[in-house]
Image (cartoon, rainbow, N blue to C red; front, top):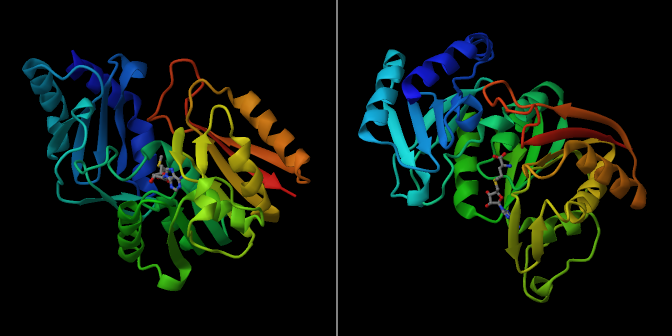
Length: 317
Ligand SMILES: C[S@@+](CC[C@H](N)C(=O)[O-])C[C@H]1O[C@@H](n2cnc3c(N)ncnc32)[C@H](O)[C@@H]1O
């Protein structure tokens, strides 16, 4: 029964929720599926609403009522979505707050995720505390990373989805970020990154028009790729070939700068992945001097202490 499990999960989060409230955050995971005893069920608070998602079996009426009762004390609307139903008609946008920034969420739209990945909060917090200067945000989605970085510098946000970048521009406006400090580029990351790194563009896409950029290095490069995608410039494959992203991303990081990398694939072990990154840097004449591993906050508990989302901040010389 999800009701009592939800109450226990809320109890475990008391201290975290207090700390998040203190740092200006009102969006977090309240229930995290199998790790809390109910596979395929997540419950998130996104500011003014609670969002219940099922990823496997749909909820019975009894389970749904139990969840509504357990969430009653929040006095917030509860929105349900069964993910296997696929893309949904547009719901209205809502707002949430993270680290004092306002960000857009939408529970139902043609894509699947509600515009803000909560488990990446720890990396956005790192940026808010450490980043200064220029940031390259690759696979930017709705630019939450760029919005945080532009608070103390500037960001170039690259994604091939105009729809996602438009939400990013809205997010930047919501936070009064001056346009000259927040740039978006709607293009495949692969040719953009290779051009920034001064490398030739590959794949059949190279024969057709694509957006041109000059080679350039950034103070911070944020590389948060999807697990897999294929386009006319080749494939993104973070399990078998992280190096083809890491090599140009290292080249686009200024000596002394930081490359923040993520890997969401559960089958990739943290140490092996980091070792591959160190080898890749040496092979291409760069060195990873420092590695700081960021672990998602405790609203994303993991059964075995190895969260599927691995995040590392690499100090590069
Ligand atoms: C998992 S989301 C990234 C999340 C994001 N970094 C954040 O901070 O919320 C994946 C994004 O990558 C984009 N994408 C996937 N493959 C791409 C490619 N080859 N070039 C550009 N964007 C791509 C998708 O449009 C989507 O917005």
